Image 1: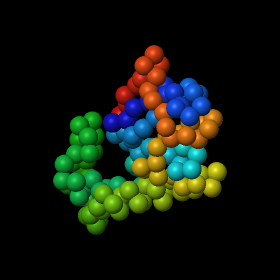
Image 2 (image 1 turned 135 degrees about the vertical axis):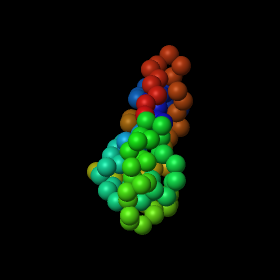
Image 3 (image 1 turned 45 degrees about the vertical axis):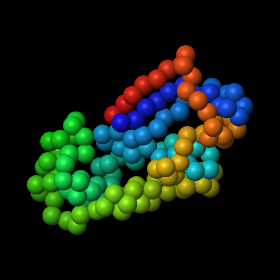
Length: 130
């Protein structure tokens, strides 16, 4: 499950929207250099995603249980480990315009000063998404 919220930068005080975590149908990455976001749909990963789902042995999420069970029952290709799946997601995301690389474990960053140090604004918006 992912979340999107109003953040306050600890470095410069700028308020901005930060998002973390993927959802039922996509992975969310950030550029390790500038913090830009990029979403990679699971369906765009083809057999890699199917092999990952089959290897899990359980549904990826309750909302995708039917799809995941069909994949488990019909997909005949190789099993894909979590490490292999994550590497494929990062490869699909590629390089950011700033020259950095999109990574699953890179944090959001302040768009003004690029600091990764921030806190959730208790008076701002907060949304959980899947």
